[in-house]
Image 1 (cartoon, each protein chain N blue to C red):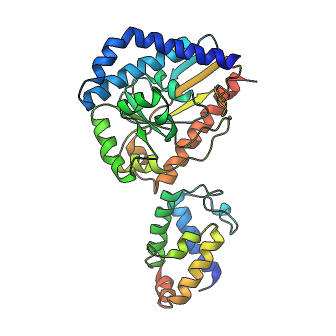
Image 2: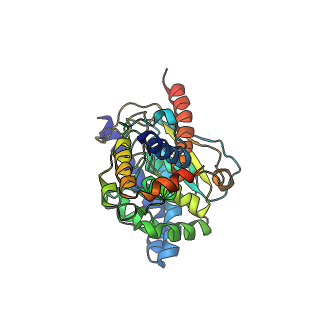
Image 3: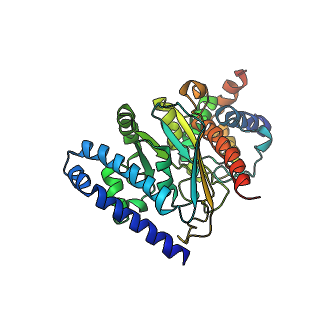
Length: 244
Length: 94
């Protein structure tokens, strides 16, 4: 029953949002690809905010903490990945961003269309060698990159191992990294897309790791281990805060 | 070259490149599952091994079969036997 209500609430919220922004949305779709992507990212950001702060509000309260307040440089946001709602929770950061996603979300009706229009990167389709150019171009425009280096939802409090690709890219392009933590939504929804009782979901941005800090690291592996351990340490504290 | 020396040289690559704890580098450890390397990390590993041993490894098909540290030790033991000049070269390394 809870799941039906959550899905209904999200659907209703999106329909209402599109009703309000319907005309700008349609105009945006007619703009040249890059301009369209920019405005679609803005529209998607506010749609995400509407979902997490309005549609999900009767079921779970989303609380955002920014430990990197004042840090505005575009960079790569590295997040742990417990549940499908993570994609919406990224709106809490309030930044123009694209997400690197794992194939299937791009195929979803409406969300997939939106993601493609925003310029999200499908990790199963984007050739590895094209990332530096695409990412550099986005960062130069002030667009951040959001990545979930676990590759797939863990569906639990523990984190899966990270893949090194995004860290290699950060090192090659000398991009700041923002470690980000999400806790409380591991069963909201679970891996079978069923929503369980959840009171609070915590989202936190940690201070950035500057290229100067990791310049002397011998490999992307070392950087990924450092970022993973920062996120793991913080999510453990957040989990402890959520449940005794 | 003894197997111990070879193991020590290979382990040093893991320590230098990935800052792994030498105590974790036991022969049965699986490269991907236990040490948490992925395919991109393996490229760094190969670069490090090439640098240490001075053997071109890019086209080495046997590398594709590697799953554990023991597999790497065995492969390099074989490579060193096939390239006797390596012993002398490695002996000169500090």
